[in-house]
Amino acid sequence: MFNDIGPLELVTLVVLAVLVFGPDKLPKMIQDVTRTIRKIREFSESAKDDIRSELGPEFKDFEFEDLNPKTFIRKQLDNDDLGLKEIRNGFDLKKEMAEVTDAVHGRESETPSSPSSSSGSVDMTKKPEKTDPDERPPFDADAT
Image (cartoon, rainbow, N blue to C red):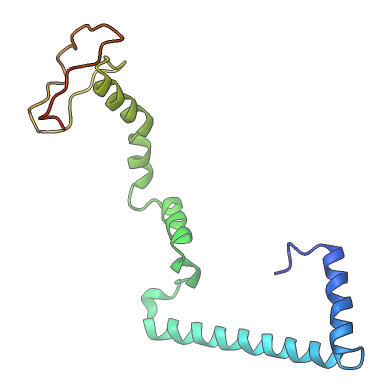
């Protein structure tokens, strides 16, 4: 809970608490705060238990931390019941982007690939015409 509070900050908080509440009221304030925190925790635990009992035995191992999307995704990726690792490993985004970039610029890619779109209007296997590096390619109004 207080992982990021250093010793100097802790001493400053104690001195500030003594100055604000006084040395005679400070122990009572600490007791009240700890009692309130304890009641909030008990209420939270009882609410969790009630929700689990209402959901039934199918959700007996349900954790409320799983409601956080990052935690849920991380748990599902570690579990891999859906085969997500195989899909993730089979898809190389850098390679796909390089192929698309090469096709747009009219260069041949290192690995031959068939076009995945079924538009039929663009022939990706045709070699581009050799042009002067300073010359711009012709404008195609249909392509835009």
